[in-house]
Image: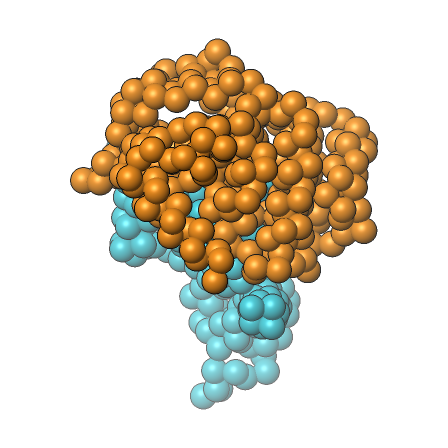
Length: 223
Length: 245
């Protein structure tokens, strides 16, 4: 009986490479859009968490706690299975972007909050004393300083986000993990399928992770 | 002109300002002194609403800034503040610190803001530091930049909240010199300070605060030569003894 990594299985994968390429492209696209969404949510809720108004802080807290303390799979299943009952039928692509984006937005928000809270109170007061309003003070004075502390954490979150798009395989998301899995189930050539898939994730995630490590080291030097 | 009418401020159970009634006239140089915890910093921070009074009214240039939906930001444009801790923007160069608010808040063209910015840097003696970052400057230099930053907003009123208290002794004078020079102009100045020499030299009126109240006020001659209130005498006695040692 041939082993799991027999040469003919690799040859079969080679013939069907477009399946993997298509999935890979889909993963990159979903990841990119989810990342944009996560960054937006992270900045908005991270800043709200340091607002003077208690209502805004509470909203931010609820978002972060609910998202961080339930599994991503449940959140994705909610979008995919529960929303249709409310008459909202989203394409799997949208479910992917929304689900993964909202999930990592909560973690981004915590990174932004930590960064903003590390900036001395006097900075916001100086900005106010010059006539800045809350959001413009954030934009021009607080966030550019908070960035230094928040970006390494956020880059690590981007890595997790890319890997977590694989959860979408469970709702036939059309991304890399889904195509790898369905190709493997049809051909029964699991070995090469998962090895190649793993390598493809590695190829996008590792440079990002290394970049995050470098940013962290730079920060330690500056501190 | 600033008017405070029946202003109270509570921090939790602490009653920090008690029924403050005070008018600062246009062009007046007002110096506020008092022991720490007397409420003098809170008083000046109420004037630009960095602290919101618990009760009472504050009217700046005819605008009641304590009214709901008051255009507080607009009023603050004409009411610059210099802080004890300088609070320069560390991610901006010295010149950018001076031009940021004028260009974004007052929509002054960048070139114009830079031109006046350089003029104010010349006035505080720091033209050569225009492209430096705040962290590269001494405390005294940072505070002079902070004054120039305030001036570049072309304010009618300047608030100084203990501007020399965080400075090493040898740097205090360079900041006071700038403030004395500034006081020769027509700008309204409210200065919270422990520098009695400065108060004597520039103040039109000195206010002594203790326990959240204005205990005594008057022109510097009256104030330093013939204080009436026992608490003022005791405070001045301590301060002057301390500065003689």
